[in-house]
Length: 282
Image (cartoon, rainbow, N blue to C red):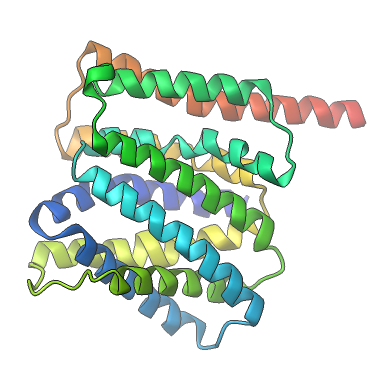
């Protein structure tokens, strides 16, 4: 139960930061923002860990960190071209992409996953105003959802038996190195508001959040983790409406409802199947 509670706290933080990041990258370049965010996250984790990672923790952390960096790059660039609410909802598709990717590791694919994927993609098209409204920002955010799903699957299969804090530290460090090596330095010094966004996302939405996720996934399956993280799109949507004043027309509202229904419905179907399976084995 403790794992569920902390993951729910993580989703609330992630949902709120869509609006925060959107405002920050409006006033500061995207790549330097990500660079500073993950440098802060790495420094926080380095202060908490006080030890070098083991060889396997280093290998797994670098691989997972590379996927994580790619996910945040596509998400943040996409967010610069779409609304916080749309970004949060589309990012939430990682929940239905996770079992698709888990199929690579031999996990059986169920019919409700395919149904959820089809429903979610239809909802996404309606969310952006129909086929003509699909922009590069939305496409990049779908790519982000795929990458986040891959990140969850990799951690679920590779992290058990490893120490959570060093593994999270390596992921943050790998991401920081990728954004630094990508030539993302900026001669502009961030404003006070941008620094607040960097510190909040670096400390709470990156370092502590992925430390908690890595720790929890040593005890939870990829699909169970995805279930808990289904609350992130709802938090993001609420923040977009309350803090950013985003409004949805009838078509967009139907699309948002379909996306949320696909995300939540998929996980409810998974839980029901698991419960029936457990009863059959008893």
